[in-house]
Length: 327
Image (tube, rainbow, N blue to C red; front, side, top):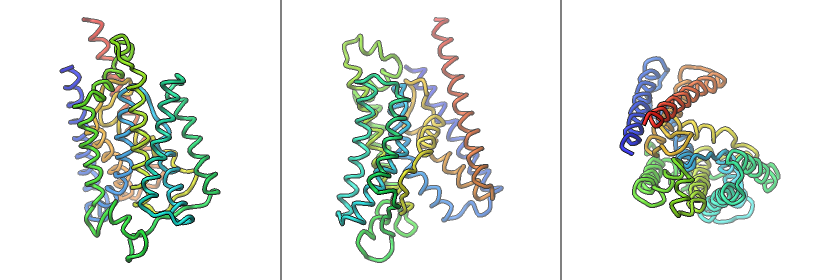
């Protein structure tokens, strides 16, 4: 256990060092990288990806995966926008419904994986396709909008509350609060202990008399709940929602999780490392724009970073297995 903790701490330190190095690099070679507009761009991107990444961290620690979070986030957002714009549902109620939609999809994932015994990759891939289609069907493939943070009209408070008021990034407080809550859950509760235990050896957990499948459901529900929360911050940051989109955001979240030290083989990870990974991905995306690189280059270099992080994870797992065999 102590060795695992040391590995997590080392990975977080490496990720933090990489984040600082990236920032210094773009500060040196980028154009106007150190500015309030750039900082706000980094933060705006980090909010919704941060919620997605924190949620999927729970799933990956169990040794699973959730490919549906990006499209679930967008499905929740477009349905919330439809209810607000076309059916005059109060905005606050729309936000609650968006979170409930995300939680519902997370519950479906949990049931498919734990009760029907589908592989997490296949189950969440199917839910990704279902959520993509459902958002398009319900909205009739029409773009939905959320209120802009201008004036005092209906819903004008939305972005000011969830993203920023002037130059004050209020979204930081929401993300920090969620980070603290999930950190406590993982480190101080029975759910956290069982989450790590299932990822390390699910069969041993089952043989100890614990209903492993029931505890394994909860991380998927948390992941869906987090996607519902992410839909609020995405809507507040970008205002315009397009049905049928959202694919790719799950990869950003999973990449951030792995970069932050969560092992794809399960049993190792932390939400604090995940947040560092989120900011690495955000700084990389915004920094490459400051250097004038086109979108394909951004995707290409982000992919290189992800491959490097996964390679390090594989090497770490291989060394850990060798040590176990020697013992």
